[in-house]
Image (cartoon, rainbow, N blue to C red; front, top):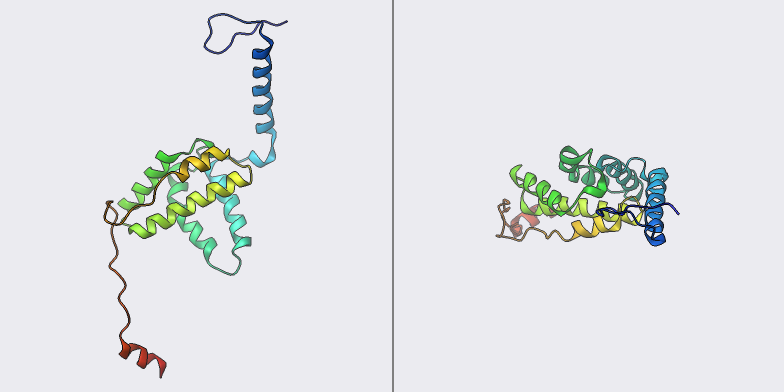
Amino acid sequence: MIPLKPQGSAYATKDPDVALQIAQELLEQVQYEADPRYEDNTIVGIVQAYLDFARTYYRKSKQAENIRYGVVQLVDMFGTLKAEDFGPLKLKEIRQCMIEDNLCRSEVNKRIGIIKRMFRWAAENERIPSGVAFAISTVENLKKGRSEARETPPVKPVSRLSILHLTR
């Protein structure tokens, strides 16, 4: 039996459970690194895969283009980061950047929603651990009047004269 030193322990152990646990962790790591789905598991890789999916899924609408706009700050700020290291605080950082870029609250919420959906898609397709998608899903939308984000004026109804003029 090979003596093993558990992490954080001053002494080695001959406990077979510890050996089994270490062997399982090593196996999982090797399988994870060898799996072609995880080849480019950076934010940029996930974004590219999601855009490829969106172009086929949303063929007849401009949603793929909206997604591209929605992930610009994500790629600019965290493009080289491993997707599994992305979390709620980083998402809030992106949201704050959008606010500083003077996007209105509804547009900020829309773009953050796109990022959340992308991470859910990545978890569904086993490109990231599901815990990452769950963690960022806990970030709340900005509420009206409760953030620094700019509010847009309400859309007013069209006058009857305009409708009559357009229907002629």
